[in-house]
Amino acid sequence: MQAQMTPLAERIRPTTLDDLAGQQHLVGKGSILRTAIEKGKVPSMILWGPPGTGKTTMANIIAHTLDVPFFTLSAISAGVKDVREIIERAKLQPEAILFIDEIHRFNKGQQDALLGAVEKGTITLIGATTENPSFEVNSALLSRCQVYVLKGLEEKDLVQLLQSALEKDELLRQREVTLQETGALINISGGDARKLLNLFELVIESAGAAGKPVVITDKLVMDVAQKKVARYDKSGEQHYDIISAFIKSIRGSDPNGAVYWLARMIEGGEDVKFIARRLVISASEDVGNANPNALLLANACFDAVNKIGHPESRIILSQCAVYLATSPKSNASYMAINDAIAAVQRRGDLPVPLHLRNAPTKLMKNIGYGQNYQYSHNYSNNFSAQEYLPDELSGTRFYDPGKNAREDELRRYLKQLWKDKYNY
Image 1: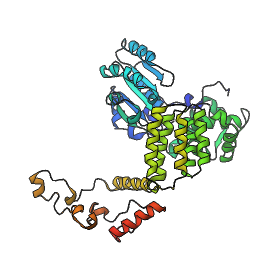
Image 2 (image 1 turned 135 degrees about the vertical axis):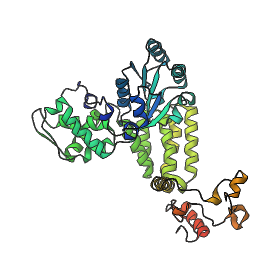
Image 3 (image 1 turned 90 degrees about the vertical axis):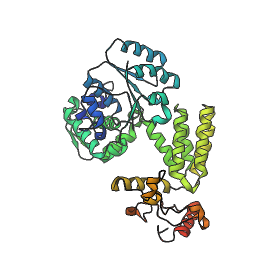
Image 4 (image 1 turned 60 degrees about the horizontal axis):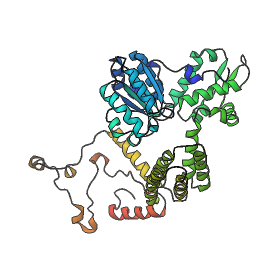
């Protein structure tokens, strides 16, 4: 295998929906997107999901299935001129798909250049992004697109990818490869199929000359990954590894680690808005109500970075990162919403208790809507111990205050109000 050779992930890229790993909620039998593809008419769309989950592959499959001209642009290198040239070429075709990778990196002017063509149907736009399109895609363009959320691949999907590579790839079939252990491959790849397959190929390459049997173990994978990380990260995966190290340093209350990884990102030319967004998330997820000011400062940091830009924004980012790293930590609010969502998924749409329902009409009042609701401000300490959950979930505690000074105070307050109901 030569260094210039097409990477394994490209060589075995799926060409049909049935071969796509994961994403059954989007492309499984009977799903909305699959049905649209099979009918030969898909809407303009934004594919939003983690790296290596199949966004580019899905776009290619759509174009291949529909058998229409397929144009591609990378938002990192393309400009308005490139967009307009493709639109002019698309006008000569009955149908055409334009795939834009990392569409979140397009500025307002570049996105505006797409509007008319998308609206008229000159092109079917497929944009791929790892960022929340609500923040990064113009509302006018977003309103003309369906947003499909791709999920991180599960372990079974990743193992199947490895086995499929050994069966289908012509070069790997020439090697005697035994998959003894897959844990390290899966953990290092972090659910990224492209990263998984490229690391897999690198491990096989490093194991010895062609014709020599290769036994894939966790130790072998770790040895190769540590020694050849620069080569392993040449296609950009390091971007995600370093932001992960940055956030984990903040979560671990190490300001030194936080500013080091921040410096790595700044020196590497990372988008400062991307860093600032992650700080806002960390302020709520990892600090939470242990220090409510953290979210205020992180949000102010995001606003300031957008106004100031590079290079001065590094100072603002450093201040915020150090503040978050040195703040007390709590993930109680994060866990509360996760547990509540799990309850919704498990129990379905439980009815709203009658006394909590809105009663804008006389009929609704007559059948009990809003009846016996106790307006908290009419009671001592502005509190009435009425039921706010469906009967089936009565007494369920979703919010469990963290072990820190601020939330210990909240725990005592909730205990005083609710006595033993939620066991605070």
